Image (cartoon, rainbow, N blue to C red):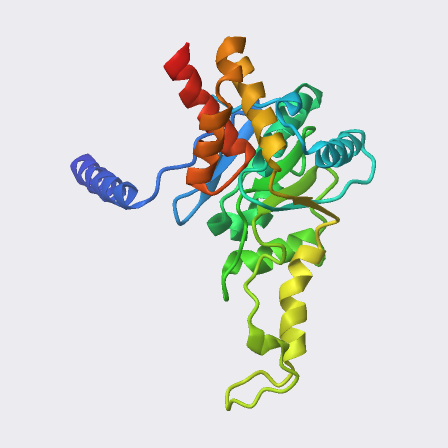
Length: 288
């Protein structure tokens, strides 16, 4: 083969490779292990851990009227970091009462002790095995966090989460816990027909009781259940006053905010910590 033929062959090969690279997904970026929080990203064919540069921080002292829940999850997280036995946690209950904020507060409190947070969307839970493989040899301790968790029939993430929690032949390791929040205790919808002792339809389940057991079994694999309840009016107002003070609102304006704070909650149909903080931002912006 002459040098000219070889040059032509190399040139054609380079063009083919260039066309092929245009169809291939880009390589995932390197993981920035200096970050304290990560998001799991997935482009359909591969996933990667993306470091969060601006972490939304909240302190445990900012969360009021959930003292029992705070003490339990803080104790569990401290045991986790100390190498003691610790449980996966499922937080359920009323919206806006501090479930996800409590997880973020654990990161703010224990990040300097090696705690890291990985946020995983429900749609990406099927990648849990891959995520655990990536972090299994790391010296840090990781909480895999899934917010507002619930499943419908046939979703792939349900089986993956169930296996990782308790059931897989492979252990997730001593440096991984799963914290999840949900407005639904059993994470999957349950139907009245499933409670019937006998199914009369042609395509019905022969053992409907076992179908119910299957749906309840996922939440039972979380070692700790924490329930969050709607706040009483006085609790809601107390949270409003706290955030008004934290945002620099003068005392005289804090005292005069009561009626509008109650109207704000009434319009939204919820007396929650989230609604209280939203009102405090609006009131402070108008009066400071």
